[in-house]
Image (tube, rainbow, N blue to C red; front, side, top):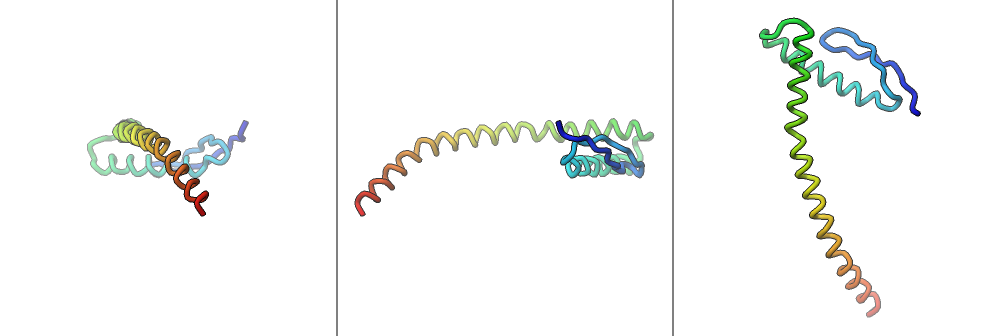
Length: 105
């Protein structure tokens, strides 16, 4: 089991100590920066007051963005599967041709 460390991140000018699995620090820091940016964007609009409400709105916005990218990832997986199938069909033919050429030399 990996070790857990405590990492300090700053979000909306406040420091938070967060448990983090060893080796995952860069990902947690990146996530904290993204959340901080989103919360600052919301705070600047002046339409949402209170850190809890800003946090909820940021979480909703980030989740929506994540869900918006999910279909793209699924589409990419389908495309990769089709390409893999085509390569699987063509590669044996290419290997056979290459072997025939080697035998001719």
